[in-house]
Image 1: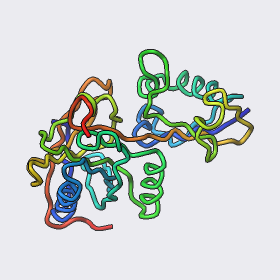
Image 2 (image 1 turned 60 degrees about the vertical axis):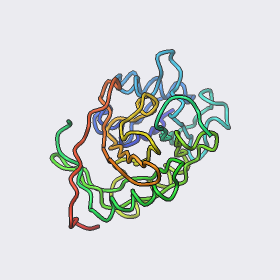
Image 3 (image 1 turned 135 degrees about the vertical axis):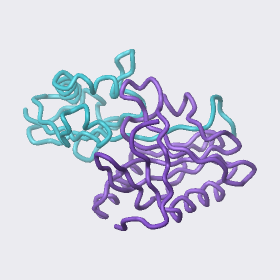
Image 4 (image 1 turned 45 degrees about the vertical axis):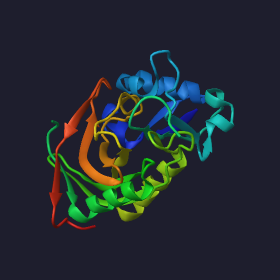
Length: 98
Length: 149
């Protein structure tokens, strides 16, 4: 099934400057695999070294966060839109302080 | 130092400093809107956001994906781009920490303002390397007049 994956601005340089990429997939996992196989430079920004999606990478199917669906096993249908949405984090130093 | 300087109007920089003072001793954060060109990048507006890190707000900040989507929508309505983020380091230097690097995205400009004892001090800007290994400092050029939006 053809689904559209929206690439966030900071990652477009690694996807031939495209704002979206169409891939064939039945699940979110398949779609992201197809995307990173096509544009291999995206992999290090989306996945950590252990192969998991980075904690600050969020994925939506249409308007639903996949964390509240079946995570990367969430099914996708023809015409669905998958959005990769950053969360932004940082801070002054290591260790937590109240 | 990465290529072109990040231009920002003096009044916008003052707003970032004021936000850092307002939230001290907690970190402030917000979105930077502007234009990105081949040879220049300019901040033209800001969107102050709430720091969503309740457990350690003195040395952590977080912008949730919902707030990122709000920032993207706001940029789209203003017909400008979301080009980066700012945050404060209360009583700490205006240098990215290892925690900053681990959570950073490429391409965005990250402005950091050091707020020492409630007073804004050094302000720097940084961009992550393509390989995620380190940051490059990005020169800041304070302008008296911006191109406007």
